[in-house]
Length: 430
Image (cartoon, rainbow, N blue to C red; front, side, top):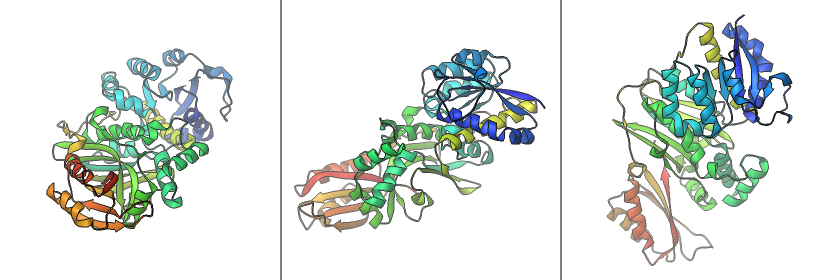
């Protein structure tokens, strides 16, 4: 049976998961593929620590270049992360005619345009299933299963840390900082959690999904980004009472010749399937013209789920190599005319506005100011909190652009009856 050589750069959590999967299911893969993926080398700066998986020490090296240059290695698996040395190694591997599998969403979000073109120029595979949603097969679904479809929209819960925090804030009524500390103690959040809770990890994934949706690379600065630091248990409670659950959502939506891409905490209607995705789980909802709505759900991170996604890419390439086919599917399948990216401030949605006041009669004043800005008031509720001198008014607006909502919020803030800031959250478009 033909052997296809594998070289791994980065022997951390995911790398160990890939190795474990190869050892455990290598025979199954060989039977299914008609060729055997064989691990030839692993490069990492630390080759002495226990990874919880047994490997032949002779294949361990600290020299990544030796892995890329090895003529017996057909597929380079980049699991280093970041955009530093990882970028150099991926460039070198693609230029050398080696297929590349990566889980590096930051690398693709910030340098995808260059790398997709380099893979195409050298007629080699660049696969990245593990970069979005861990073990959820969303990339393959968009690249292949839905290839005949025009993608209308993608809504995703793509960060397990944020979803864990928001879920626990709701179920236990705890403050954000308290739950963040718990998430760090549980190992769900990093010591420096900014990449997750400020929305940038999700934004990296949104860039990749946007590129697949529109058929050409999308730049990182085209995606608006808001995180969850400002979310309070009070807003979670009020949203729930009005029929919504707050989630950090990656939104990708195609409108005629424009693409909208945004990451922000949003109110998701309780009857929407994404509202039921809790804890560290991820989910992606895709709407397309032929297949309507499909949902992809599972673990968005972890040693074995992410390792499984990497191995799935490896299997695709092994099968292609066994059949003598190079680059069976381009990294970003083209879909005709390039479309324009709409600025996030111009993306229309309904909004949730929370206004803490110092007077009892506030409904009319707040609603009138919203209406004066040409924005409909869809619903309005009054809540009484012991910590507030007056009632709290919560408004769900009609559809509006962010700049229109900001104008209304500024007018509301100027009222003498308003105490504190006005909380503004989007309602997920459906």
